[in-house]
Image (tube, rainbow, N blue to C red):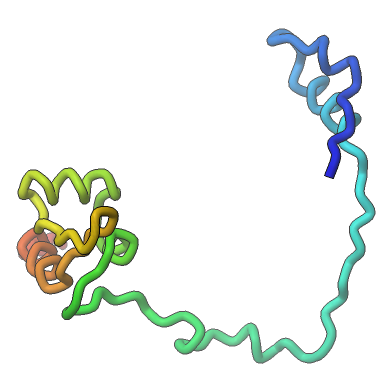
Length: 123
């Protein structure tokens, strides 16, 4: 795919150029494309009904081990915090499976989550 050269007018845009003018120049620089529309055929009403088979509820397993991408959806912090806290003891330490792969015990994560969950409920 080759890109079309930009019109010379765009080279004269400065910080004081109004946004409206910049947008006009931008649309001039991009050629319009006639994209064909593909119509849907057949009955798709069965595809719109919610099912548990298509979207199972996410649940943290109780046994085994998981990598960062597996456990982060259940943790209230980022990947960077996960590794920092694992290193300094604020979160269970991961086990190095290889030089580039670390995994955490699901049982340890459940224990940590339970110990950091508020036991009081305020209504």
